[in-house]
Image (cartoon, rainbow, N blue to C red; front, side):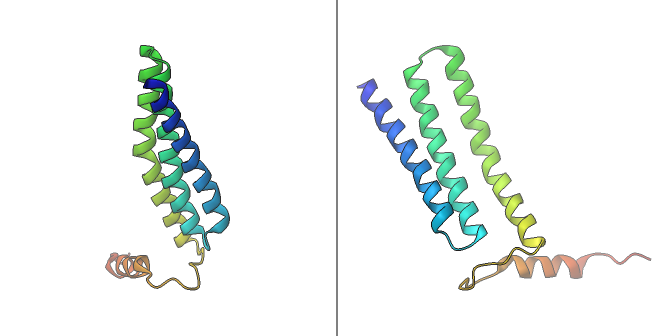
Length: 118
């Protein structure tokens, strides 16, 4: 039963990482590519590390793998947000068929609320 669970998690992890690689090629703009890559790769690496925890039932491997999973799930979304915001501020274009640009309104509001220097 344990071997079956390890095989399923490893396969799921590899499939998520494969989806992330397809997303890099198929998505139309930088922001979509970044989003799919961060989500799918994080889930893929998480599944593979959980499979490693089940395979190596050693305490040191388990704690290291769980620490990696914890920090990966905490830092990946924040890093993706910051990378996309910097890309937006520096002028990376949205896809031509994008419907909404919510960040444009937020940035204009931030600029109008800044105190003026004397």
